[in-house]
Length: 591
Image 1 (tube, rainbow, N blue to C red):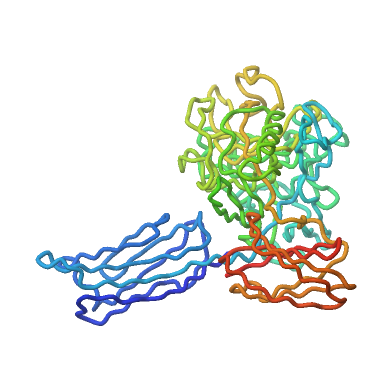
Image 2: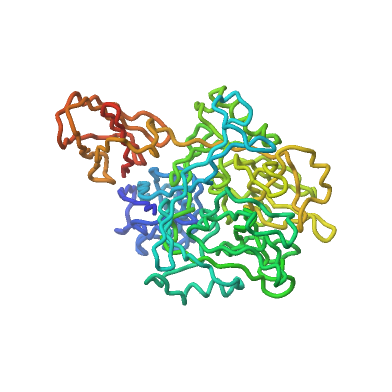
């Protein structure tokens, strides 16, 4: 959780003071939230003259996303820290004299510093795909960046623990899950059911957000779309690890399709789908997609849509919450996931193979100062969706406004935003590796009831053919007529540069400790040496800038201390200690 700490210094400047007054700012500390940080400046009523006699002006700088309203005694300033992690702000409250003598007779200035104290992050779980594909089938993974289809990635391998009490712990995210979702239920009952559930000795269960729920998906599954009812389920593989979670395909004897294994999240779509239906995002672990499902009248016809509810427990604002920082160089770093993204997209449409090649072309150009860009996995790409936005409700793409998105016209000739390719292949039972995943940051269009409309919501994850002609699909594809575009857009990603991969633990752990952490710039590093060795300490910012390099010389075996001071400002840093062939990395925070 991020805490924004505000410290204040007040200076009273006056050319004519008619009464002693005070100025204060609340709150003295705050947590960032979806609407920013609200600061209220209070003026003593004796100090503030009547508005009709002495109009008051308020100057706030730097004015970054700031709005100000006021009444006689209070000033309400809302600061939008969406694109900034720290800064110094000045507030000047100015009281001019009457019109006959407009000289300023009183100015009160307040200077306050907002400091980012990032103390938590979250891990995007990988897709569990260890194979590589061309446009049809499995291939040997290319090792040369100039080779076709180079750049398919997996991410961190999923890891679970069955607790033996009906719960499963995700060892990557720290979230604890209900193992068996039970029977299908309506959305309203899914929401209320969490409060009555006691499982594993816990009663703080809740319906997951869409990002939490999507963390469970694994693209080792096989999409059964198009498979006729009656197909042996033993030939199919779901998109969730059935070694740990109970899973059921749709019961065809009860009128469901094989693919009807959708799960509710608590993330409601901010617009509507399928004929103005209020809908809720969910994951289908049978066919490997995110869609926004109508609360009523779903695939089962009229009445409440019934789907599975897999409850979760853990930090409510942990997994899936972003903190974007504009690096000022056309890159954006999510300080919660330690991924750096290109601020701009590719600007034109490409098919899947061309998307992979476009990224490698940019690497060859050392684009934006880096040469290790890649096409994101579907789960990485979904991690930057902002589900509070949509073209219909915010007139924007479903992504934070720190990013830029190319504008397009959709199938209904509406201004809209693109689908973006992921590197993840979407394997199909009948079509093999001919499809790849994408995330829709605009409307997820489909052709239903003779018209094009948003059928699955901005933020949906679906799939497109890797090659072909979109004109061959004039009315889309599938039961909701999913728009088939084939040519989509690209947004690059890279791991934040800190030499020595943080996901590659040392063979000789150094037991690094940094204290205090967080600190105000001065801290002590302690570490263990098993034998006499030369020690080198390096420090990097989240954008890969070298902060310092220190050769500690040859040191004897045992526990060692090294005191350091950083003057580079508040933020998250990475400390790298190199001892012979052993390397350990530690994250720390400066307030």
